[in-house]
Length: 318
Image (tube, rainbow, N blue to C red; front, side, top):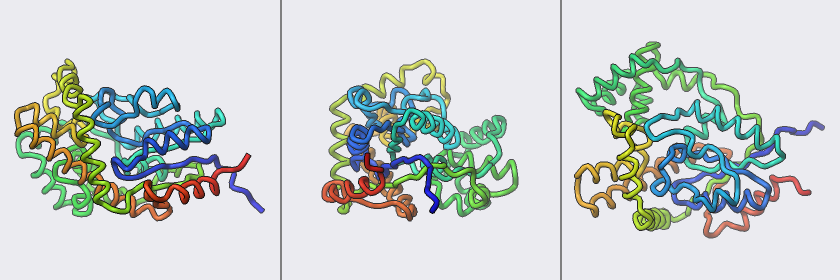
C-alpha cells in the first residue's frame, strides 16, 4: 500500500476579525510550528495597527514569515508572494517544523496552493499608459472598458480596485486574450504538501460584525491614525503621485483613514466608512471561502472540540 510522503501544513483561513491570529499562534506553539502569513496587507512595513499585524510579543512566541517584506510604496503580486512563501515553507520543513499558513487573502492562498496561470509579465510602459488614462478618465471608466472586453473578470473585480483593473486590461492589451481565459487555463505547479484547510467563521454574521467594530475601535485607541500620519510623512510616500492607488493604502481601513486625513468627512464618518468597508471585505472573503470545497468550517466560539479532533486526525502522533 502506498503512503503519502508529502510534508504536512495547516491552513487557517477565514474572514477578517474571526480569530485566525490567536488560533494560529496556539496551534504553532503546541505542534512545533512556524506561521506563514497569507495576508496582502501584512507584507507591508509600517502597516501594523490598522492591519492587525501580530505584535512584537506574538512574533517572539512563534517565528513568523512573510511579514514586512515590502515597503508601503511597493507592490507584492500574488506570484511574488507565492514564490517567497514556498521558499519559507521549504525552509520550515527542512528544520523539522510544521508550517501554519494563516490569513484571509484568497488570491494569495490560490497562488500558493494551486499555482497561477503563466500570464505575461508586467509591461512598465503599458502600465504607465493605463495609469495616465485612469488619471484622465477615472478607474470606474477603465472598469467599464474591462467589462466590455472581459465581463467575467469585471464581475469579480470591484470598480475601485485599480491594481486588478490595471492588470486585467494590461493582459488583454498585451495578448488580445481576456485575463479570465488565462486564469481558466492550466495553472502552475500545485504546492507539494498535504494541507489541512480550517476555516474559522462565526455562524452568526452579527457576531462577526460586532467583532469587526470592536477591533476597529481598539485600533483607533492604539493609535491607528498616528500610524498613518507617520506613513504619510515618509519621503518615498510623499513622492508617489497617486498614493491612493498603492496596494498598501488600499488596504481596508487605510484608504478611509487616508481620505479622512486629506479632509474628507468627520472622524465619525471615517469610522463608519472603515467599518462598513471591513464588513464588505469579510463578505468577499466568505464568498471565496465557500468555493474551497476541501476546507472544513468551524465557529471559533463553539467548535473548539471539533477543531481539536480535526488536528488530531491530521497530525501524526509521536
